[in-house]
Image (tube, rainbow, N blue to C red; front, side, top):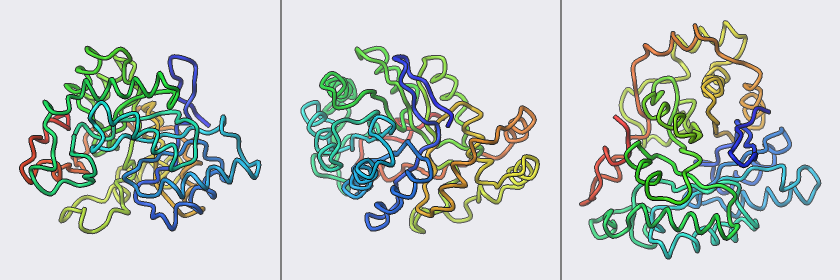
Length: 316
């Protein structure tokens, strides 16, 4: 398995199992199958509403001798409703308790958006906290406290643009070690990618296949199908792999970790086998010219009297 190396020598498997969108009912079997298939990196978050099931699967796999805790890399995230400084460490502890784990390998701020305690999805102006009420600098200090307390071995962010990363780099005691973002040939995020690489911030690609399993209400009319993109099909034929494997290999070739989601055991094995393929410069050049498209718009955070704009989240 290819690995991303952190400054302290820790290594994270570059292909992980994304658990977003896998129901609580499916999550236990999905994670057990993934670990048996060879996955050692599991990406989690409390908002996915499957922490207990994912944690049970991890602990049962350890108890059955399939893997040790030290061989696994478990990532989780801080939800938007826990951005106040005093809420950060308790939120991390709550996730560890829900998953029955002693520590995370990586803990991320899920979004640069703050909401009131107990609010999963804001529906009115009062549900939001402004950047003045919950400064990202304070949230990051709470993340550093999680690191100091041994609740996590590494800290980072998700869905952060360059401006937000600069705030943390300038004001924090510890730099962010990861930025998890939507990344694929329709959204290479080259400017953000270059900034992260120049500042030694690793990147993890979510929605690497274009998130084909999203619910219909989260789709936009006539959105492009990344798995059906002719340029991807040509690359797949050239390398003797599937389009999904070509897309995962795209992230690996750019030295990004990647977390495709699947509860299907055969699909999981296929995704993991993408590590055997590598795109060449000709392949990458053929993808640069593709039209750009973002599948996760983030517009749900800019309504109902929100103090946030899309430019507070995305790099344009």
